Length: 317
Image (cartoon, rainbow, N blue to C red; front, top):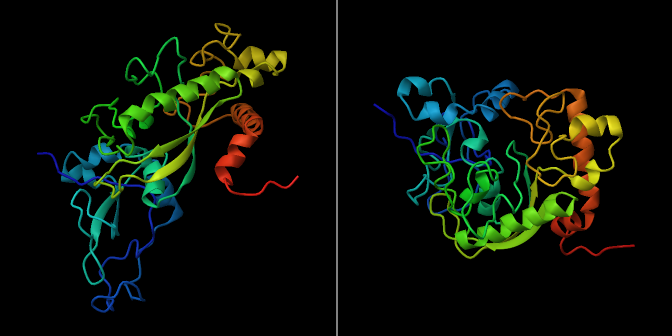
C-alpha cells in the first residue's frame, strides 16, 4: 500500500529545528511572544544539508511505502501551519512533526512561494533551468498553454497551469497556484520578447496573489517579480571570439534566431541550458563561459536590476 503524506516546503525558519521534543518551559497561556526552552537539537551536519538539498528522489520515495521513506533524511520540525488544514502546527509543549527533507525542486525550485509567504514585495527570480525558452514562432502564450518543452514547468504551475501531471513521481506542483492563470501569457511573452531583443530573457511584472490555503498565502498581495530566465544571449554571442563562438554556438543557428537551438556535441553541448541530470559537474571552460554570459547580461540590464533591488532608492550621480 502507498503512504499518504502532507507535502510542503520552502525556506526553513529555524524555530527549534531538529529538536526532538516540545518546549520544557512553554509560553504562558495567551502569550504571543517570549522565551522558551527546548531540548538541544540533534546534529544537522553540512553533509546532511548538502545531501538533502539535492535529494530529488525523496518526493517519490516518501510517497511509496514506509520502507522507502527511510531512504530519505528525517528531521523533527514545527511547521507554521499543518499543510492543508489551515490550523496551527505543533506549538510549545507539543511533539513536533516528523519531516522527510528532500530537494527543494520537489515543490518549488525557485523559492517563490516562501518569498510570498513572507510578503516580499520585490523579488528577483533566477530560473536556471535545463529547458530552453522557445520563441513565439514555436509557442504563442496567447494561443495555448505551454508544454514541458516550451519553458520550465515551475513557472506555469504558479499560475495554476498544469504541465506535469499530479501523478508525476517526485513532484508536487499541484498546490503551487499563487497567481491568476490569465496573467501567465503576459509574463511568458515578456520573457520571449526580451530574449528576442538579444540582451537576455529578463522581464519585470507586477502580479497580485490569489488565495492559497495550502501555503497560507492571502489573496490581494501585490509583488513585483523580475523573472531572469537562463537562455541564449544573442548580443553576447555576437561578441565571442571565433574559436569560442564555433564551439558555444550551434552551427544550425549561428544567427541566434531560435533560443532553443543549442550545441549538440563538444565541451559546450547544451550550452547554456546544461542537462541537470547528465551534466551536473561543469568543466572550468563551461563554468567560465556561463559566468561570462550571465555577467554580461546583468550589466546589459543594469537598470532593470536597479529598479528591482532598490525601487525607492535615490540615484546619486
